[in-house]
Image (cartoon, rainbow, N blue to C red; front, top):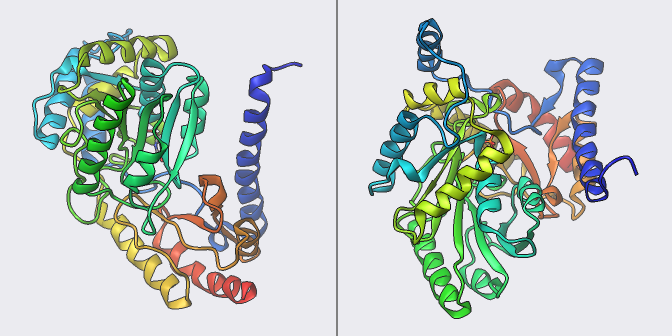
Amino acid sequence: MPIAKRMTDMVAAMEMVTKMFEEGDRLRSQYGTENVFDFSLGNPDVPPPPEFKKVLRELVADDALGHGYTPNAGHAQVRQAVAEHLGAEHGLSVPPELVVMTVGAAGALNDVLNAVVNPGEEILVPSPYFIGYQHYAFLAGATVKTIPTDERFHLDIAAAEAAINAKTRVMLINSPNNPTGAVYTAEELAALGEVLEQAGARFGRRIYLVSDEPYRKIAYQGEVPSVFQAYAHSIVVSSYSKELSLAGERIGYLAVNPAAEDARLVADAAAVVNTMLCVNAPSLLQLAVARLQGVTVDVTIYKRRRDLLCRGLAEIGYRFHEPEGAFYLFPQSPIADDVEFVRLLKEQLILAVPGRGFGAPGYFRLSYAVPDATITGSMKGFRRALQQAS
Ligand code: PLP
């Protein structure tokens, strides 16, 4: 066998994703870009804030700027800047030693999971969920165990409690959520924190709450509640991929709750994994984001698109919960077979992702990181697909 046995299924699954993208390109070249309505990608299209290029220009104009390796956990002044901003947001003081600069939230998740999870242990994930979690768990030799959410895709605390066992090491949550747009409330997080605390005592082991927050700044109903306030053994992972539209530049961070026991050891272990996986986060981007703390993309653009898409689809007769954050809508498929419905949409030149790709058959995901014209132009096709399905 030319490749590692354990990679065979992973490569096959990735090929399906690649095929989906190639199919989009094929449709665009056949029918013209303006006639294809591509809601399949979670790639932010809103431009980065103008401050980003300004900061970048200033940095590269500085002849004294070095381009060598940085300390593995990141430049000291960058960790300081991130820790200060994060601490202010979460209402507590975060020492810079508990922050590690990473290659996006993906890099941060790989760092954290490899640092705290033993092979064979379980990571609990509320479903529907971002498929990347399967990949990160796979690399850490861990298993993802999904737990149901409630009818609005919010946390089902009783289900979480019932799922915890002697193998549980991490509860991994994502709010604002990809693919559902749910934002968990402070009450939900507090209840979850209590359950994790009690379960940890019952099973005599530490269970971490890892909160994946790359969409934190894209929230439509005010601030996203803090996990640091809800549970001591919590770790935040995040990035500037969405809040500054820098997904391709690969810059993010992780931060360990200062209230966690052994917080420094956990952060140091994550920094060691960071060293093993990628040596250090991109130096130039570290320096840039340090100067952009508190700056975000224009979220009103995403809100306008959310409203446009929700209004249009509701009028046609689609059923969904209005997203509270991120830039995804997760409607019910009008027929049980979501893959078949996504095929019907494709006949109308609309590209979407079946819900089963997120552990939720019977739904489909639309990313509204697309121009307004894509949304308005797609409505006829959405109507026809619904008619065909019924
Ligand atoms: N977590 C979620 C929920 C995501 O949707 C994504 C990317 O789409 C990531 C993590 C990875 O993001 P990053 O670009 O910061 O690595």
